Amino acid sequence: MNIKIFWDPQVLAGLTGLERPVTRTVEMILQIQVKTLDDGIFISGYDTKRRQFDAQRILNKLQVYKQKHGISTPILLVTSRDLFVKGSDFVFGLARESSGVAVVSSERLRNEFYAREHDDDLLVSRIAVEIAHEVGHILGLAHCKDSQCIMFPPETLDQLDGKKRAFCSFCQQELKKQTGEEIIDSFD
Ligand SMILES: [Zn+2]
Ligand SMILES: [Zn+2]
Image 1 (cartoon, rainbow, N blue to C red):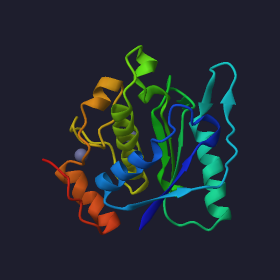
Image 2: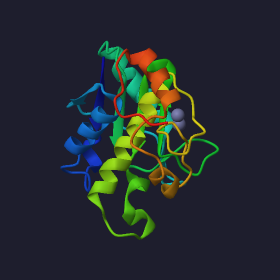
Image 3: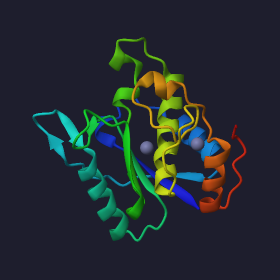
Image 4: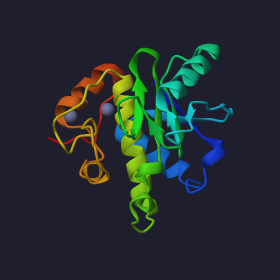
């Protein structure tokens, strides 16, 4: 199997040149092929009061795209727009397992958001970890209590940075059932 990723073309400033290293890192973590989708996708769901995008509405768009194009493998959008879901101040990303779609925002993965110095390597690593987390959900994995595991749900950037770029041995087994692939870089 493979996964397909859209890179939001309207707001790639700050992400230019990072697609490739992110793609490679995701492939390393998940041991599945990652393809880039070149189509444009119109993103709706802007909330003028919150100045954020409704992640559920973005997933609706991705779901329609997927059905229209008869895609059966997971598709995911990476955007620099800040995302929310009802009941939360923000989300790093969101997945909808039933339709195999997910969105990840780079906005709060940037050091600059926290008045820290820019760091490309950290940004690449964080986006890749977040993508792997959402793909994990698409493939049926639940949240994990192990704070170092990809499937741990971080509430802050520091919690996110405390995760390894790998699944714990339990989540690795679960993932393997779904993908049929051996994950090399796991830990326990
Ligand atoms: Zn999650
Ligand atoms: Zn785990």
